[in-house]
Length: 449
Image 1 (cartoon, rainbow, N blue to C red):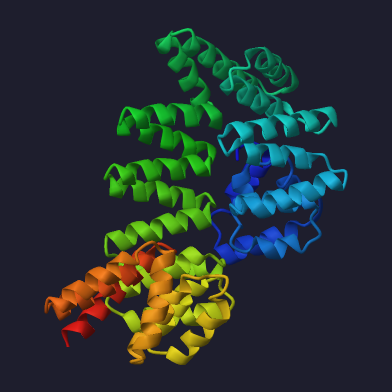
Image 2 (tube, rainbow, N blue to C red):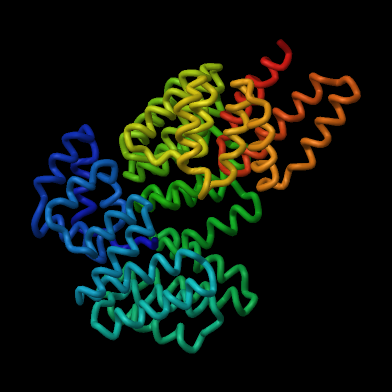
């Protein structure tokens, strides 16, 4: 979601407590309650102030927040579907600020349909008197990118008129000037105006110049914009800089910006990125620390990251056991993955029970049933379920190829083809790559024996 460019008294509060241990920070947040907490979650409070406590903010939700305020918390946690429901509830409960939240979520989709919904909700908020200068500016941006200049210009003018902060006015003015110059083909002056708006902290301008730097592979400029983002606490922009740097092989610098986003409070997404990056560098102990943190926040990414590391370390049984225990403890582990994990550690009775309970609505579970019955030596049941599962996965022809290999005398080749085919079919429904690779190795080792 877009973040308001204006720095508020809450920024000072944020800086004052940011050096404290997380538990103590949270205790302070709990004591806020009442009016100050509601100010923190108002439509002008930057999202990073909410995100600062997002790993444990559900407890704060119990303090009697409105639907709109709970929506802000969920947005900070990147739970946009849940946030949309809260914003919708706010609208139905006569809190028209919910329209602003729904507009931001719709606009972030970057689709024609999303923009159409965003325009509708911004207009509803403004008609109800729930708008602010930034909502008018944001509506202008949506109109502008859809080539609706006549509708955009009045919204930009309204945003500049409404805001009493000169810095914010200048942000808006520079952005509009930059867009107009760029459309007219004046790239030099257009980019200069956009740079000016970005340096003042307007996240929309910052995103624009970052995209330009990325397009032209100018990593030096990108890092400069990442530093501006850090100055203004734009956590998502910091994270985006890290993602682009990592993609371009600048891993050490990517880690720096991920850590900046983490420090600013964007804990879940930054922790996920850091866990993956550190895992790729084989810094397993620190990566596992981030995975465990994600697990405590209820993120499946933490579980998947942890099992990926365990599989990479050759700890297949420990990885499978972790998945099984995670599901028993209420983690949302897909049935397909849990059943495969059970079969890998030879808990066949539990795997069969889980598969049979769900195979009617998830036909590809027949693949796991085929594996299990093969392990148990029941060839008839194995062939039956394999054929069903592979047919659903569009790979039934591989069975015939394996039979032809076997008939030619290449028994090991036939077994390997079946193992690979089964594993690849399973991969189509979301098995993590590391789990898949471990399963293939396990099957090949058994075939060789």
